[in-house]
Amino acid sequence: MGQTPSPIDPGFYRQVLGQYPTGVCVVTARDANAEPIAMVVGSFTSVSLDPPLVAFFPDRRSSSWAKLRGCEQFCVSILAADQEPVCRKLASKDPDKFSGVAHRASARGNPVVEGVVAWIECERYAISDAGDHEMVLGRVLDLDVAGEGLPLLFFQGGYGRFTPASMGAEGQGLSLSQLREMDLARPEMERLVGRIGGRCVASVRLGDDLVVGASAGQAERGGTTTLVGRRLPFAPPTGTVFAAWLAAGEVERWLHRRDLGAREQAARTALETVRRRGYSVGLLSDAQHDLSDRLVASADESGSQADIEGLPDALSYDPPDLTPETCRAIRVISAPVFSGDGRVVVALTLHDFPKPEGSSIQAYIDDLVDSAASLSRKLGGSAAPTP
Ligand SMILES: Cc1cc2nc3c(=O)[nH]c(=O)nc-3n(C[C@H](O)[C@H](O)[C@H](O)COP(=O)(O)O)c2cc1C
Image (cartoon, rainbow, N blue to C red; front, side, top):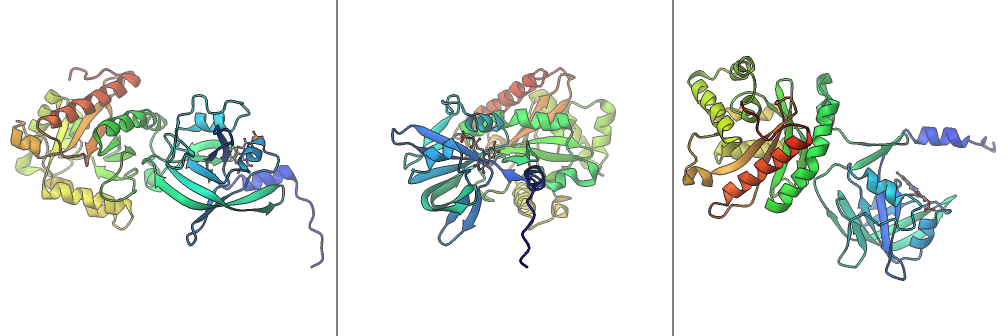
């Protein structure tokens, strides 16, 4: 009591507080001439549900804040992991910060940055003193999740992204090249679900598992849960898109990971079919329904990984003939992405898509196969190397 606290070294203060990671947001508004203005903040936080309030803490010396301070309304856009360039541009002193930054107007006319994870539109509720900063409270007017992307993170002065703990389990994290593949896959996947609807996931092989490394599109069921980090055993009948282009010895290993009994021949035929067609399809079945429910439940953490083991056995994949009837039953389509050395490194899988009319399932398939081929080219591979 009564002791004057000793002054804290600013560098040490920043170093200690830099141990706490934040997301990265852009606060936007329109000035009196209707020109968009923006400020990047890491100090955004939710505050209250009733009334719905959020806050951020601008530096009193910030010239961006000087412009924003007079605005009655503002919009907070939560940047996605691939938006570091957008962040750097909007945090710069460039007089034309918005050049090259795609944005649109909200229903109330506030700028919303495109490609973000979510946005929250607010009216000014209170501005109060916070030392060399101010505390701004905004009352939420409207908000939405804009995509299924992962957010951009800021930690110890650098940018990064979130990796679910399940991915690092048992020391089996995604390799750097797999993370890079996921990063390159995302825009391709976003464009695909933008055209077709539904959801698209990119999976990679991690030892004896298939792991979802990225996802795009809105879930009709399951709300905003992401399937990223979910695992499936790499064993028949799942993973044909990876297995179809493996060397013979590895195919045998894949086939014998399970005791298939009489179904072994069907699994071999399915591999040939996938190689011939260049893609794999999963058909409507109770098991397919069940798998998708359990994957969502395990992503919500209300179910466990063990719940989905054993299930893929009952799934129905890749019939030799695609009759109109089987085409109508297609609920999942997967296409291979090849690296420069001809290996399948990623599988792009489209699911939960709108019911196709007439022959449009073929259009969905062609679109997915084209997206996978274009990603293959980005990775230095060719569209479909000869088996
Ligand atoms: C990741 C990141 C987080 C930031 N967070 C804040 C913040 O919470 N409050 C703040 O006043 N400035 C923050 N800034 C700095 C401002 O975005 C901006 O760069 C700074 O205010 C530049 O000064 P100006 O507004 O005068 O152009 C942050 C910048 C970055 C890159």
